[in-house]
Length: 449
Image 1 (cartoon, rainbow, N blue to C red):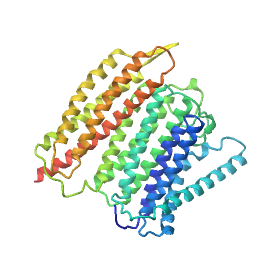
Image 2: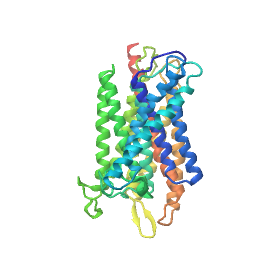
Image 3: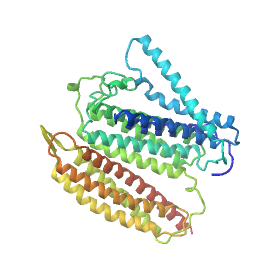
Image 4: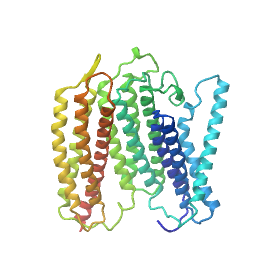
């Protein structure tokens, strides 16, 4: 990454937003109340994340001047603080109108100032050593950041389901009558925290999707990329609405749980559709990368068949996601006992897992046998096989934990294994989508050769 380049404002935006996503991921675990010492250590990592964000911005400065690098880090800090405004309202709680506005002004000012200072220091530190030249456009960087944000949203959603906290907050779009962005942090405890944090992550993903669409439309991108960015934005919006209607069953501003009609069908669709959204943004990240438009894609014999099989794998995985969602959401709660699960859903999920394993093994090994191609088929194929192995292990662990559960309290190991299984499934689908995209690209190059 040696060289020099003037980083555009959009690059500061991408760096700042990536920093915010990292800080939110760290803060999410800190708010799980792991203990005073561990909690403080985790919050300390948020400062480290801000310093690293500023460091990267400083490295992209054209000269090694500490002042210029600090300014670039500070600019990224402004962008990071702007994204973090989504959670500022939850920090000062309730009070009189005057006190609320005073607290809001204090928190906003403090957030912006601290972000500028910390990331500015990081930028000054980045003045040392060689200059970096961005290999990705701002849109490509932002697309990858959006993928990470969506994945974190899926992780938090999986924890909501695993902890059976899907209806902990009974109303939507408000939270216990509060504006979603103003719900006091002090009241986010137990299942309420996991459900409300998931909603806040949804807001972060929504802002990310909107910003990425604007960046793509303002950039020199192909028509396909522009359409995919718009389609992705619409899908994110639809996913958010489905998540809310899953809780209320209909559009209402009421906060009485008795007035709600939670939708089990939407719970299943919401869980599966979220992973499809993730796969779409993985496609978009690939299409925005510099290697996609490279003319150095070498032809590969038999690429047409491999391309077809990679698309088959995506379909097979989607079917497996549906069976898994049915198994998780169709459980029947029992008083003072573990919930019961439909046997047919379990057998369907376990049986279809064998089909997924065989298909993924074939597709992954085929990609790893490719040589002489500049497309990252070998690397993606290797990643696919590693994820398949992990998914099988986590799946077995999840099944064992669910079977061994005897009482109503949810064992920690069950939550851990089911969440890992669900998250790895999302990564598996995203990797398969990326592999299918690259096989299509290589197949097109082979057809022209």
